[in-house]
Image (cartoon, rainbow, N blue to C red):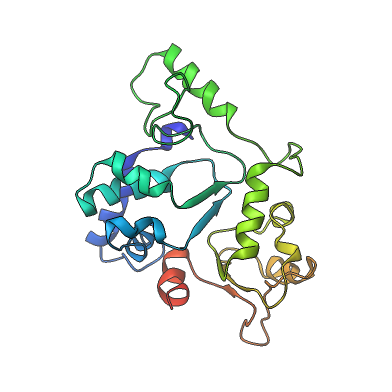
Length: 239
């Protein structure tokens, strides 16, 4: 995963979509869309009432937001990093180490910059990999009930007025971990289900008192949309 953390993959790919006139088609730049939704006076950026919970290990979203805000506001990345720290971003299964602006301000605390796995010698690569491994967890491992990231995620979901689920596979274990199967039915929650089989969609309604489900006979009133993330943000989440 570390070799795939490349800024060019977050920018150049989408330039190709725009050049081909496919920006609004499958694969549109939803990171860019999210950044636009969060746009406001720089001093007020930390007041954006949003929390992000992710099951991914990579740090691409944080990196993209930080570098994009720096260009947008004409600020240094350090200034934007401080603002981003005011936004809740929780990695349920950990992440590939901490970016330079994340984690403790201890000079001895090893941090891994974005694109760290580049033209470096084998020894540096081994050290980078060892530290990246240190901060990730895998589903097969036993996750303690008082895991701070999980408890924090549950609290944020329970307190949220609106919850949007993007590109989630709805694995039963992941649903259980963050307590989604115990949310009240009147909770406002919507999400994408593109690529899931019809049986998988129907099975979601059997996972306890979840407020999500797929009802093919009643115009899908329970929150799941057959859209990619880009179209979902533009057609459903923006109200």
